Image 1 (tube, helix red, strand yellow):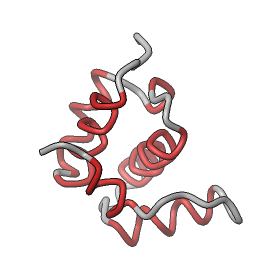
Image 2 (cartoon, helix red, strand yellow):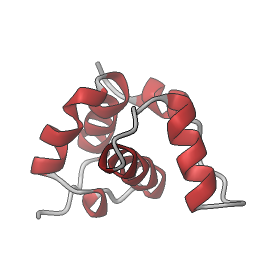
Image 3 (cartoon, helix red, strand yellow):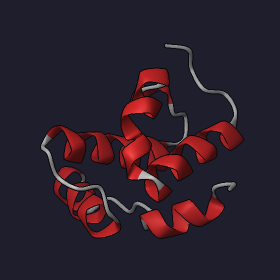
Image 4 (cartoon, one colour):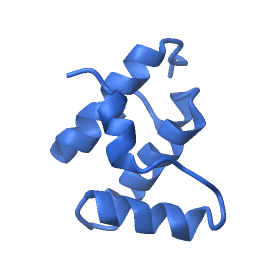
Length: 88
């Protein structure tokens, strides 16, 4: 897949996932977590994909729990704060 070079595009895609979790399969058909240059965005998208693969709902608390489990001790911005950066 092509690497995403625009922060705005990354923010938009992440926003779509966080605001409309049902859009995750469509987003992942276009780009994968590895395409995100912003590390925090990439980790959040990976967490969402892992939750979906496990059949779990994608929500703020579930994402935070997944991030804490996968990346203990690493600071990652709260998904709500990341979503606020995302364009509508």
